[in-house]
Every structure is written in structure tokens, then in C-alpha cells.
Length: 312
Ligand code: RIB
Ligand code: CA
Image 1 (cartoon, rainbow, N blue to C red):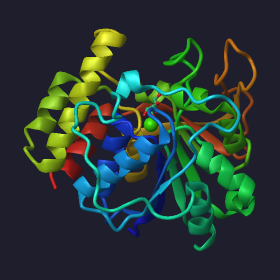
Image 2 (cartoon, protein in one colour):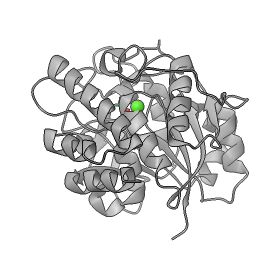
Image 3 (cartoon, rainbow, N blue to C red):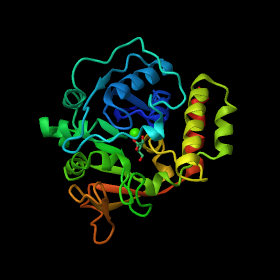
């Protein structure tokens, strides 16, 4: 099985960091062409630094990290540091990584990376506000047909919102970019809260990660313990959902997920429902829709996959 050429677009962010560690731990399956970062959970200068920190911890400094959009396309930036800590990496002590960000804006890096490869080969895993990908599509529209697909963590239907009553954070943070991406015709697999809320870090699952006693596993355990603490303080007693790693898990083991063709539109103007994803199952022609919405996840399988790759 050949490795999937992949660009990870992210806003680390505690769960982005776990997703990056999983992706970095699967070099035989994922050919990481670049990591691109965006302002989101924490400001852009921190998300770029945090991606470089995780890259260094994973020992993958050859993978370029490109810093991208500091602001959403239209609306004002709205961070989520209450869920990720001021640094964006929870309780982890941040440090200045050895290797700097690569030259050039992330959006341009996406264009150059995708256009330099055969059509239909490069995948983007988008796990933050999709400003960089939307900008890339506007800078070079040919990117849409050149890309293989985008795997998105974002949106919500059955589960309601996690940043407002009706919107999930990544889409809420930049609804205009999300609408550009979802209306572009690019094949998309979308893991919204309907999917990620099925994947929760229970004490038993955390204990299994801790028991590995490996460097990356210790970092993941600390990140997930932070999420458990924040979830308990800000949301309620349920274990925290594992959002962004589900995009990487889908790439590594799509058989763990059930996805159905849908229509999907984003609310970009209503002050009350900004960022709402209107996910339409009815009357969607399976062959005609570019978007597949994940409805079911084998959560035990996702954690087994994470353990397998953290075992090193
Ligand atoms: O709603 C969850 C998403 O918002 C995740 O990508 C998390 O990192 C935050 O960005
Ligand atoms: Ca994220």
C-alpha cells in the first residue's frame, strides 16, 4: 500500500497536537508533504510554534511547517484558548523549536505543493478554520481539481454546536472559508461533532495510553489529561471527545467509519446561527454529492489505532 501524500492544516491546539503525533507516527502510510498552520484555537504565531514543537518531539524536522492566515477571511478572529490553554498545548511547557517555519505563506505552500504533484494524489486533512485552503482555492482555482480530497474535522448536525448552540468551532471561526471549500466540488469527508462525540477519552482509554510508557505516549497522555480537566470544568462529566485525530484515523483506517453522501451548506450571515452546517441527507444523489458526512465511528478501533502507533 503506497503512502498517502498529505498536507495537515491545523491550529494546534491540544487535539491538533495529538493528530499530528499520530500522523508523524505513520510514515509508511502517510507521506507528510507539509504542515500548514492557521490562527484558531490560539493566535497564528502560537499555532505555528506549536506545530514545530510537536514536529520536533516526533523527530520529523524534515517536514516543513508553513505559517498561514492570522485572521479569518471576513469575520474577526475568535480564539478558543479556554479549551487549549494560553499556550495552545495545555499543560505542556512550550519551548522554541530548533527548526523555523518554512518561508512563504501556507496558502501559497498548499498551491505549490499540490500543483507540483500529479492530479488526484494529494489529500488535505483540515482540522482548524479553513482559511488557508480557501485562500489557496482563490489564488489558484486549479487546486480544486488537482487535489484528491479534503478530510475535514468540522461542523455539526445531530449534536448541535460546541462554540454556540448551533455551530462547531472550526466552521464558526471562519464560516466563509468553509463555504468556499464545501461549495468548491472538492471531494470531502467531513467528521463533525456527530462523529467525534462518539470518540471519547475515558479513564480506561487514557490509562492504556499511559501504560505504553513511550515518549510520544507520555505527551499524548498529558494532552488528553488536560482535555479531561477542561471538559470536566467547562462542559460536564462526560469524557472529552477526540476531535482532530479522527481525521488521521479516517485516513489510516477508513473501515472504522461510516460516511454517507450529503448536501452541506454553511450559514455565513446570521448573527444567531453563524457557522451552522446545514447537513441535508434527503434527496442527495449518492453519485452527485462531493461531500460525505461521517455518521458512525468505531471508537474502540480509533483508540486501538492510536495505541498501535504510539507504541513506536
Ligand atoms: O470543534 C473542535 C475543533 O475546534 C477542533 O479542531 C479543535 O482543535 C478546535 O479547533
Ligand atoms: Ca483544531
